[in-house]
Image 1 (cartoon, rainbow, N blue to C red):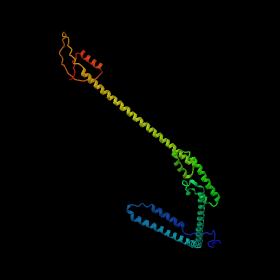
Image 2: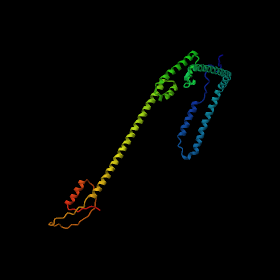
Image 3: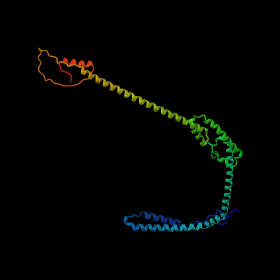
Image 4: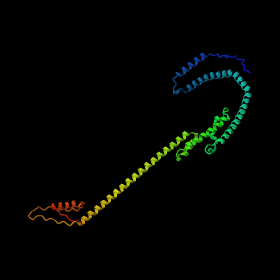
Length: 305
């Protein structure tokens, strides 16, 4: 059955709307130019409102005619559109019913296919079951009708055979990194990715160990430096204490110096005698040198009581 249109004929154009287009267009342009050249002021509010109303009145009149003609031209199409929809309604319902049936058949097929996958899973999983759940072995390509039962069984057999070989490779990793590398392997069953993860963890561990060693060396160095500083301070304090005790002992043992007698045959003018008490520290040789200087310069000195 083929749809046939009797009117209008194929390739026949609908009649154009004939109207005074150029005249109305020219009138609208002249009106627009005239109003745009008016120099309105604040006092022209009422005039501006009237001009605006007049322009909108003209616009509305043209728009009303346009809408009316559109409605008239669309009327036969809308009738035709409604007839087409009415005709297709039972067919669309039929398509929906067929689609539902196809979905039901497809769902039954996928369930049976999934059951076959589960059969082959338990046939070959063995001791790997705790690590490899059934859901992680399902692939969308296994549902294709071209993927026969023979291909499906071969896929499961090869998959678990490869996993067992990969486990041997992971056993070569240091024990401390093995579990995390295994977790990485289980994400996508990639031995290379798991080995890279193991290498990364090993390098990270070495880096952290080097950092710990360096921190410990720095701590030991700081402790040693602090110990040397404290020992030096203790020695200096001990040295000062011993020097102070020695100087005090020397002062106690120093005999009183006698005032040297000036030669009787020398006459000196009498000068004011000043007194100043002070304490000096030095070696015995330095102390004796100072004593001799005082004697040589006829300076009286004695022990401070």
